[in-house]
Structure formats: structure tokens, C-alpha cells
Image 1 (cartoon, rainbow, N blue to C red):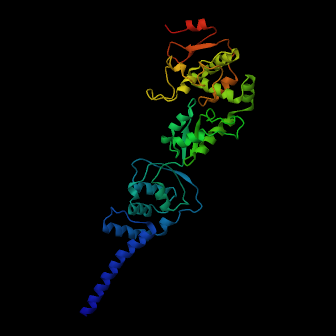
Image 2: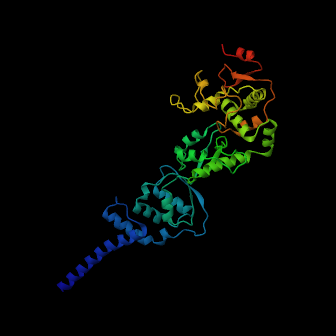
Image 3: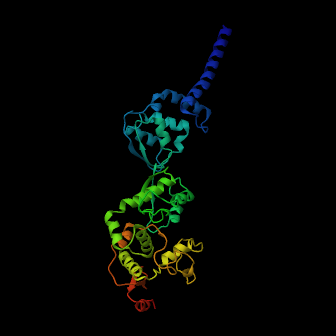
Length: 366
């Protein structure tokens, strides 16, 4: 009898040991490794619960369910989140979901934020989804008057997976598939400024194509015709609009500024446009800007085809990416006799205009 009892004890011990090994192994095979921070007893407990819950974690609550928004507030507990997920029908069991979060260690890494979840997802998939609130789409803004280097500089903090160099290489590649960009020209001037909603994984070439094609959407037949009536090609109009964009501080002065520049062009005068010199100077490390201000007398002598103080007519290409307002101002300028303007002395950013150089000099600040 003693031998039988011993064998029974040994068998019981072997069985228990077997379960202690089998249950965690089976749980790990289906649900992944347990959180290493759990103690041995807790690991076995939650591994057992994983097998007990079975399909509550691996099968969706509703295979035909539709995607819906789900918000996780900062500081919400895993238990509260699980209850809410079950309440809105995204998971079949809050208890099973919470047990899995504890088992896997995902209960401590849930991210607050806005999610798009579906009851067609398994509870395991939803548990992974709520670890990252990063949206699949990115809001990216191109500001009017930016040159392509400024767009590139904004990319590292945008959420897009594009480096500044990748963008610049794409933006500087000449386009031959669009009639409004001359053969051999870069896309400077045609990177249309506005707010974009973009897929996070968009490539540099696709990003540039989006900007340029969007410009084409705003280039209406009426706008083209108005450019022609001013004696300008689309390329010339965009170039002038890029100067007007950089010169204007307030939008409602753009038609006046465009009028002055068009009057100068028709009279055969040099444009004497500060923004063109700023563009020629490029990056100013002391001011940490692409647009040096104020300009010195030495700056105005820079040897560049973009220096409209030295060279008559328009610069060789656009110097920034103008807004629709600037484009429309060139197409439909104010009708004025003015050839000169300078900043007002009140710091408003507005300008005072003059017909003669003598009047222009008299408008200088005391």
C-alpha cells in the first residue's frame, strides 16, 4: 500500500509539473510571451486564463462590423478601457481583454488618443492598435511665400517619412508633363500653398506631384487669359506673383504692388525688388532665415541673375510659392499710375505709393 501511495504522489507531482509547463507553453504559442515582470504564480494564473478565454480573444465580436471612432482619455485605466470597448461592441468580453493586457504587459503601454477600431478586429488586434495613437494620415501645411527649402525644413517634424534632401531632389527635378511649367524648370513657384491631408507613407515624388497638380487645379482658364492680357506667360506671371507674395505684408495690398511692378515692366524700368535679392543671397546663418532683412548696400550688388537691382525684367524663375491671392493680383492688378512704393513709417506693414521718384523720396521716414 505504501508503494501505491508513493506512486500516486509521484504521479500527482509529475502531473502538476506537467501542467505548470504545458499551460504556459500553450498560452505562449497562441498569445505570445507573458510579461516578464509577472511573478511565477501570476504567469501561470494568467496563462491559464488565456486558455480559458480562448475564442473571446482570437475571434472578432462582429465579423461584419464597421469601423468606428474610439477615444482613450489620458489616465484611463486598462479596466475602464476594456469595459468601454465591450460597451460599444468592439470586443466580446471586457474581462478577457483586460486579462490579456495584464498577461502581455500591454496594460501599462496604452496610449491616449483618437482611434479607428472595428468589431471585425479580434481583441488581440485591438490591444495592439491602442498602443499607438499615431494617425495614418498627416496634416501638412505649405505656407504662402515659402521657397522649396523652407518646405523641406518643415518635413522632419511633420510626421511624414521624407527627408529634406529627398524632397529637394524631387522638387528640383524638371517637369515635362505639365504645360504650365516650362521645359527644364524646377517646381519652385508651383508647390501650391495650403493645408494638405496626406498618407504618412507618401514618397517625396508623390508629395511634389500632389503640390504641383494642386496648383494646376487653381490655374483656371480665366486666370490664364488674364495673365495673357497683362502680356505675361503663366511662367512669367508665377514669377511676378512670387515677388508680390514676398513683398506684401497684408494681402489687400497685393493688387497695388502688382500694379507697380507691371508699370515698371511696361516702362522698361528695373523691378528693384528686394525679395529677388533675398532669394539670390540664400541662407543667412546669422539671422537664421532664407530672407535676409534688412538688406545692405553690399547685398544689393550681389552678382546674380535674380538681382533685379542689376538686371532688367523678371528674374529667371519664381523665387517662392505664391498664394492664389498673389496670382490673382498679377492677373487682375489695381489700375494705378504708381512706379514706387516704400514701407509706411507706422510699423503697420503697409506701403505708401508714389508716381515720381521725387515723391518717393519725400515719402521716406523722418
